[in-house]
Image 1: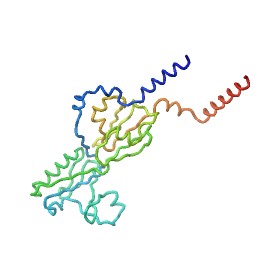
Image 2: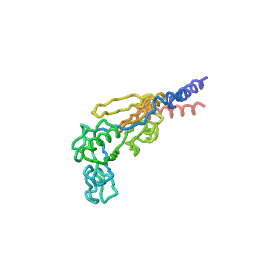
Image 3: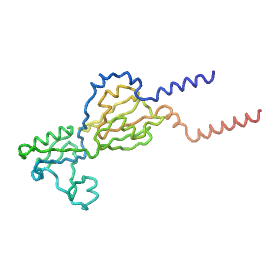
Image 4: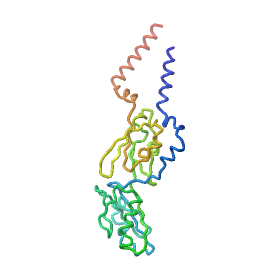
Length: 262
């Protein structure tokens, strides 16, 4: 009779662990409605590689930043440049707080809040046919796509990706998943817009509808994920060294009394 409540309690605790409960009930039609090709949005402080190519390479030369010779100021080169097939490195662009970059020939242009494709189209339309008579190819890449994962996970850290896309579950997998003390029903997603405004969303990892909400499922660069501790972690953290020693002493005393009274 004493053990029955313990068994029932363990069954209830198990239900708090799995992700995406009842996910099999989502229909293929619901998945089709939420399907989209995600594209990251350019944000302030993003580091971008922007390369303009044209059928005649000399024609696009003025629209690319100059090469930095190899071996010159290697520290700066490592942090702000990307390798090139030529005898140097192509310098990159840092988006300022207002979402602008200073582009060769075109000057200061705003690309913050645009997707890569939108920014490429904007630069294309500003170059062709006003400056170039040949249709150019604009290639933009993110060089600092990162997400921070902290709280009750196995490996809290800042994680980066090369494919410019990261899902919520990708980030948690990189961090080694939640610990047993992680609160799966109250994970915080902290996001900053291109204007600097922060927003916080509470996520229930057991909610199957995460897979249908693209604003949650797909992370944006510089997102922060905080996994809050559950009540068990809170209760254990409230027990200090003195309480632990007291419990050990009481346990030892009970054991001694039990031996003596046999």
